[in-house]
Length: 347
Image (cartoon, rainbow, N blue to C red):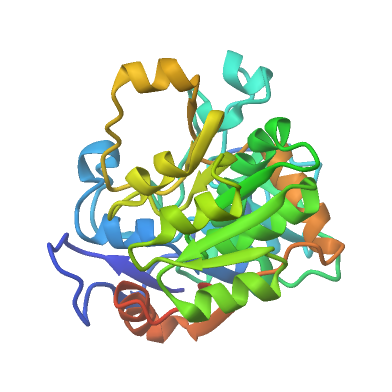
């Protein structure tokens, strides 16, 4: 089959970062294995970090291997014990196939599984290929109205956004405000999740007017250009009090400093994007009773709930599609800021 593989890490993204080549097809080796024909694979900024070697210490896969952790497609083959999906079903995959037996899995926090069976796109071969092997515990059967290319990036970007918003929902009663920092690949999904799950007034910040226009189209109540005066602008919108929740989909380039400055007393800061540093005097946290909450990805249940919203048209992705042969063009577009929304590979 055809696949895009990483052969070596590089400090800088290049036109030959990934190599499209013929490799052996995955095979069923466990009764709970599921092989799917990939109909869409999302390109994530984490893929750039992988190419640059930033995650080598955390995961250290044997090179070469296939990237791609946001995947959806059609079931091609199943192991002997699989009963939740059948050949031909349309599915989206949770990024982390889990054991189902550890305490985290049994508590519904399967993204913290102690014994994951594989990790496509990080440790094992991912979805930048025609076929992908995953597990029955990772696949969510989709409504036939949903096409893999339209929802693939919800497997990680959408899941992370939904997971953060679901946590924030507890502090976002009617009449409250939520600030979204970054209206790009994750943030534009976060805006929709906030509108679907809460009655909060949504304020969106971004450096790009195009991204802010998209956020407005998706239901944002206020859009604020990041121009040096963004904290003051949010303070004005919130009558000087700040927002009950700030959800940071950027996590670098000063976003944390801005976000802390936009919090009200007893407000909560939800971190999704990463790359920067958060430095807050402890006395300030205590005096304001602020909360800082990290968000990785969501659970299998979160993904199933998000798919229900997608089937109802309440969450949709803004995408640009690429054939697998154009993988390095897609990587360059993401790296150089030319993508609006999410890039989707169609093997």
